[in-house]
Length: 265
Image (cartoon, rainbow, N blue to C red; front, side):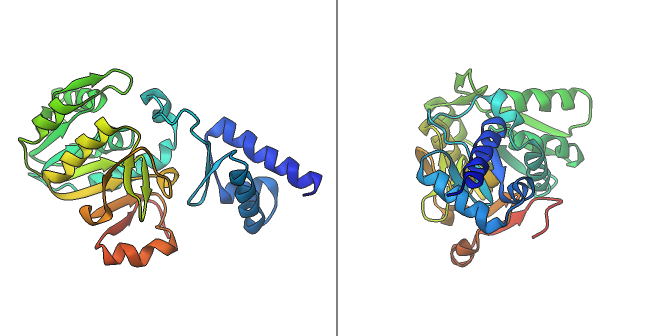
């Protein structure tokens, strides 16, 4: 490859180091080359184990194979998560009983719940609980709040483990809103750790309808624990359309892919 090509690849790695993820359109604009050239660069860098390609771009390789702390997750893909959260919340109807998974994406649903009437919300996240309590005390949230008890993960501010699973098993809900750490059409829906995944699986089991929230960095990736097959979920809310190769399988498995508010295909 030419020196210019190597320099462009280094520029891609520098952007990844700074931002954590890159999108193909922004690389095309920044490096002033075609999307086909960018795709080739990303393929070469992935073959060198310097990044992980995902749908629409690439992300940094997670060397530690651990879920980033809540504080780090909060600033990643913030705008996309806001759109996904608003769109997911629009699926909640008055008088619904819902369970909302822990995550910085699902947290973005809460602002939209102030418009709902007489809903019941089960949560495992301390951050989500605090926000709901604040809105309840201000008189702008009309509903009941149930905290899912269990062992507290202090790094991620959430309850999990066998106690949380047992607690959740005593409830039936209309809708479960579950966060995917990774999502692949054949590998299913995955999470970084089994404790979180087992609780998410219980959410699905106890729900009439399951909605998975996943921003573009999760599409085409997989992690340690698989907690659901595509046939077990009903809707995926994302900031990007599904990969074209997935569309027929999504149809076969009766999964509806919903583009986040403000996003057009």
